[in-house]
Image (cartoon, rainbow, N blue to C red; front, side, top):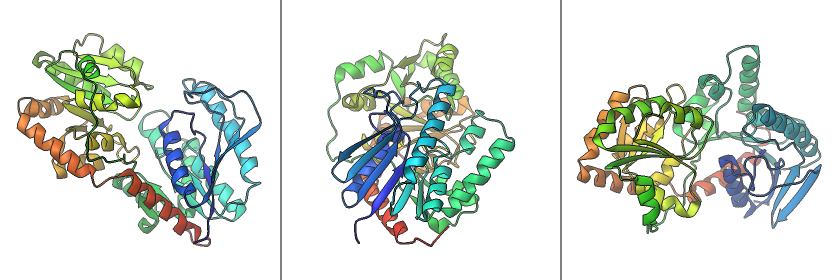
Length: 406
């Protein structure tokens, strides 16, 4: 097919360090191998690795990839008012810029949370096909996590979101549980495609820095690691209660990362000697983080299954580590781990059940070794290169269907 011009809408893009910025960059580069791609992003504000002075518009080019940045505000993301200002200024300026473009297809992600609605409106105005890549499902996430209360605003948001979903030529989601959620909103399942946030799969595992491993393990007999964002989605209190029950057994629970709930959790764990909080590690230290944990936690609070999809699971699998899933059976990750025997699962609301699941493997090295082998075997099914090729193919197919809608 002839090269397309793909317009990608996402506020965050490197040097922003948000996960959506990293994923947007991966998608953009994969598409740019065969097509002309323009990313319409905002001024970096998500813990950026470089500072941008004020400007109205700025453009960078890297071969077939153009990064068009509008001069949105860049308040620190930890302030809700500042983040809202960033969102609104980005949408206002990006809307003006997008309407002056002539793309063949529009791809919207979910930063800010109404980006899909915004992208659908731009696509309607320009008469172009629309592809919607959902990273987190809104307003469902805000409601389930208690960030917002049901009301007129959230009802209108949901109605507009469903309209955007039905407009999309393709809806790309991160897992089967999210696909089920979207289908429940009345979207034709044939229009929903699963593309996973996989990691590169290597036949040889990288060496781990033994000093970093020792620092993380901190002398505990058995270590449970949660490496990632401490946001609104996890069964955090259940994990702390689990640690309390396992304290006398020499089991440590180590959180590595930051997030909105970190301070609250640190305060709740103040009297627990076996719970530690460490900052994010660099990419080069990931092998050590993976090697340090006897079990690696993936957790989803009840009610958020398919609303958020913890893509960290693919890194854990690729490093051949056993998984502890604290999530209900509705979560795809729980189903996968149980089916492929690469870890243990437990109710996210039952700390005793989680603790008993951990006890069942503490003195079972052969079982942990079996889980490690199963993790590696499952990881080989999810390679980043293959998933990105699938993503590109879906966008290309959507571009051919100018008049089709789901």
